Length: 76
Image (cartoon, rainbow, N blue to C red; front, top):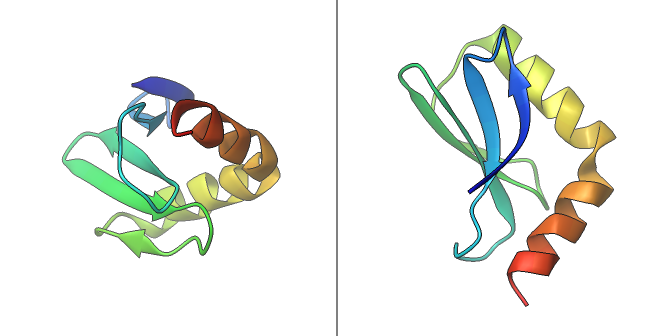
């Protein structure tokens, strides 16, 4: 696993898992949450607080190109 960013005082981690399945996605883990976010559609699997969701999706949008490059590097 590669942690790409931490949120809310390091409680939550956004990760790309090296040997994962398609479609390209990231995992947000921490506390009681394990959320999957599709990098192509930004659709979310899992429930999580709105404030956290807003912060994470905003960060993903700003860093989308780098996340997709990282995904492609690990999943050729």
